[in-house]
Image 1 (cartoon, rainbow, N blue to C red):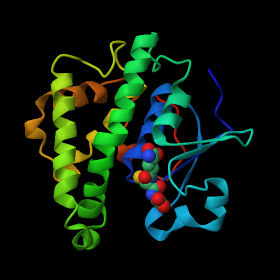
Image 2 (image 1 turned 60 degrees about the vertical axis):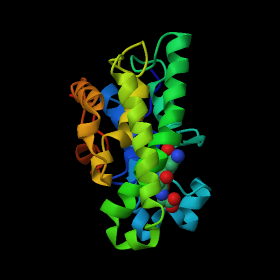
Image 3 (image 1 turned 90 degrees about the vertical axis):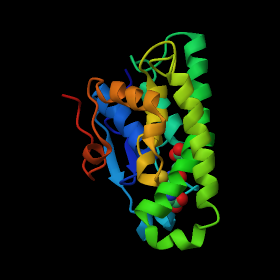
Image 4 (image 1 turned 60 degrees about the horizontal axis):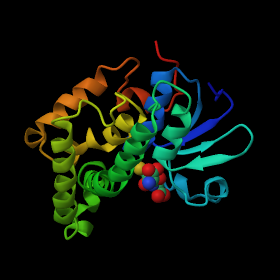
Length: 217
Ligand SMILES: N[C@@H](CCC(=O)N[C@@H](CS)C(=O)NCC(=O)O)C(=O)O
């Protein structure tokens, strides 16, 4: 397994995207240096952080040789490489990529902004009244298809629990905070329970505390 002790993972609290690599690290017992930036205070757009990540987004992983990786799913994938969280067949890895793209385009893309503007900064909701029902409708379409899939699949890929479950779980499990109704999605509820019962699982509140990630117990 690669050593990550001199790598730094930049994250922001409360974020389903930052939670993904943090949960991978927790479940694998990786010791990572972490730095938390306050997005609401503009810390992701300072000249200092933009010189590290020109996209100004979190999470972001800076490796000990100054190479770096953006995008939550890419960072999670990198950390999972060579571990039990990486599917072990070409087909299952392709399924993982398929669903990790689905997560970004159909789930996160809709759940994240609704949750952000209704739960994290509700004072800004009025500026997005036109888009909130659109994000909700699209998010429900995304959750509905995932729910159908999980009716006949215990995990995201045929390999079993993997980095793909963590990626899809990242924002899916926060959907109620965006007003999505899990009563409609009982297969997702059962799958979330399976994720939460995996070795080394910690909640977003436990992992995104502002402290370094500790090795899994
Ligand atoms: N597709 C990216 C999205 C990253 C993203 O939107 N990050 C948000 C926090 S959840 C952010 O950094 N916002 C601050 C900014 O854009 O300045 C990923 O999966 O990592």
